[in-house]
Length: 217
Ligand code: ADP
Ligand code: ADP
Ligand code: ZN
Image (cartoon, rainbow, N blue to C red; front, side, top):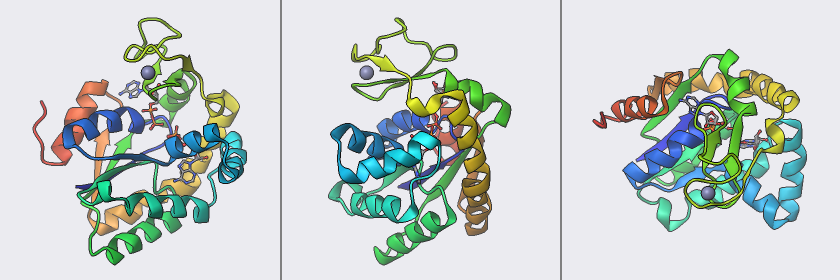
């Protein structure tokens, strides 16, 4: 299956993606994770990406599309993949459709996780990530047993620099202007399925499964 997870920053894409890929045996492709890994490795390309990420802006399409083009050409993507955080602009969505058409295939579903704007700031400012395994926590909604330590690998938890309140507000505006139009784009292709993301994490997963024809209840 070839799936896109759509939704504003903080909707729960990363949280759900971790669980979905285990159930569906798909590679998890997150452009945000790929950029953060590249930054940690200190490549030149990543340094360019970082300047945009720190301001809460999108990394330019050419760079982002190139990274996805290389990734989905890998052998582990032949049977499918879960894209998390890509596409985020109309140009990216059109490029993805073209890449897949060139491979004689297409997306199976676009899962849109919908969460009221008012909840997103709290979700993002309370988010903590594991430096070692990338697990996602929330200090109130999904707290780790120890506030500094990952439950699953004992790695150190940190707050992303772009999860500060000023940057978060910018990212939500960028979402409204540049990414929200994809809802209409994918509605028109008949692939969009919207799930209520303002529910317990486990319930959102059940609803996402149902949207894919799976019974995980
Ligand atoms: P995204 O990848 O869409 O930006 P995340 O999966 O990183 O979103 O989730 C953002 C924050 O919200 C994290 O701190 C996460 O623990 C928390 N979160 C995710 N899903 C839910 C939910 N259903 N209810 C409450 N908090 C959630
Ligand atoms: P979130 O889901 O919390 O917004 P991500 O980890 O998906 O965070 O993305 C972090 C940052 O990485 C974005 O704010 C943006 O700067 C950059 N980024 C990630 N995906 C894309 C994309 N598809 N196009 C452009 N920039 C991206
Ligand atoms: Zn961890």
